[in-house]
Length: 297
Ligand SMILES: Nc1ncnc2c1ncn2[C@@H]1O[C@H](COP(=O)(O)OP(=O)(O)OP(=O)(O)O)[C@@H](O)[C@H]1O
Ligand SMILES: [Mg+2]
Image (cartoon, rainbow, N blue to C red; front, side):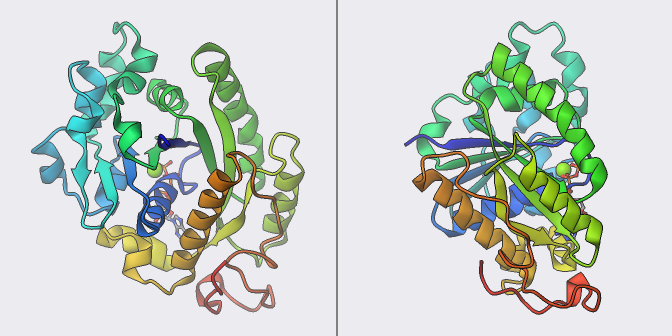
């Protein structure tokens, strides 16, 4: 079976896109799935988060070379990581200028798709980390993918941004990639002490376009996740028993179950206090960092 190619997108910044690409990728690799993560953000946070330095990236090919040079295949830019089954195509700051360089390129929306070659045949998952904008780079990611995951914070403004995201997805689907489907919404950095978080969760579950698409797994705020990125190590290897690690492992199992269940919508929205990594604890009393470790979801 060819890889599931999943674009992780949200035009809102700082919602957990990179964290999800990195840690879901690591957790799928741990399950033995051949996983490639693709960093399409010139900030290169995913690249750094898997321990690759700017110098190491500069010494070889990156996604920038792939995007601007049609003679370079994605396979030429794939690097191994320190973890079994986990590979990366790194990003480089030069990617920030790629959009302008691509302006006169014929077929510029399909550059990534064309560069994929046969790589989907040799992997189980390809996860694409997008930058926080609905730009040509993001359109390339959507054109090359089969699915979209949207990480979001349980914040009222997050729902407002969904309309714009659907607009772009509908356009890409109509014009470039009819096979593209939104198959997962992941709530990240959840803080169950606030009523507003719970209200937003309920609204998400009730959204007509998200029915059955919100992952049961909810990733709570966990400082270990941020620390692991600074250390250049996926959280499941940095601190295997922290609740952030347990959440991303649970998410990987859910994503696997989607495949077994025939693709989209194998999950349903459930209040986080009763499902996934969050044990029900008195909401106001326990700071998210200090909550007891989750029982694996
Ligand atoms: N569950 C979490 N708990 C605590 N910190 C988190 C969690 N998830 C992500 N973070 C931190 O929040 C910040 C933003 O996360 P991340 O970089 O994944 O977002 P992003 O959507 O990729 O941002 P951008 O739009 O800039 O690419 C990072 O510093 C990350 O380490
Ligand atoms: Mg990011």
